[in-house]
Length: 281
Image 1 (cartoon, helix red, strand yellow):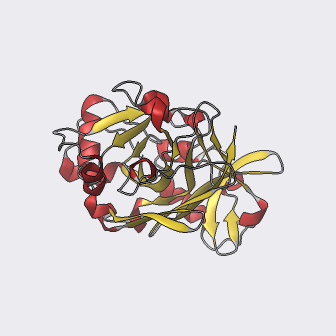
Image 2 (tube, rainbow, N blue to C red):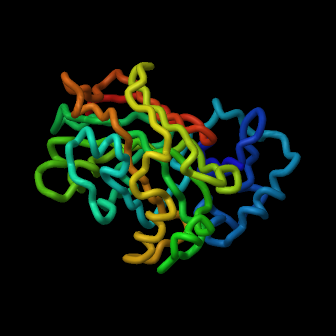
Image 3 (tube, helix red, strand yellow):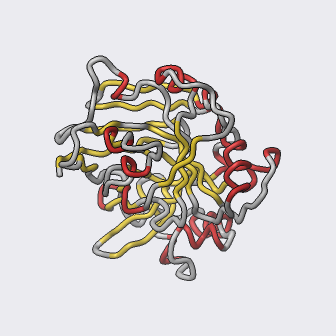
């Protein structure tokens, strides 16, 4: 099942993607104000029942996409987590995941413009898989980790490379407003039983710039749930953005950065495609 957050006729809503568009399950189940509220109530099966057999209320083309989780309490990002990316950066193997955070104001939804800030011309793409937490998780062992995932989505962890390297902390280069993208929807975990068997492709202006299998992750999704739940309490709707593969723009010769007028797409098998135009601030 695909859960979508959207805006239609000035109203924010959420629903289930079906053939021909979206069932407005937010109207059918008004006790749940958002996808995050559905996850918090452990009500995914209730949503599936409500949407079963229903015709689409809206066409996708008639909606403005919103981030699937509109108000995540935590966006935990993992850096240097694909072996090919680690090799291209010439960095050593890390004993623990490289962790940084993003704020919700730093990302936009599918179809919305990514903004290259006027402070820099070094705006890089990073296609990534997102694991969305489905129930409270604390001190979760690897063997049980996938039980805590509600589903998966796609992220473009757009990076302002020069600001990222102002210090050993990545946060400044990762949190310019509207520089990342999240969507287009959340695919429930029952449709992706093994997140290590997916293929991720990033395209810039139609040209492929990244391609990998998620089996190249250094710390896979269960390992990340185990580690992150060891230092914080994960809550329904929290995002774990799992890292980007090799092929990033700043490593290329000459470097390849995003600019106004570009279009960037991140496609992950079993999930879909996150597509965004780019504009200059």
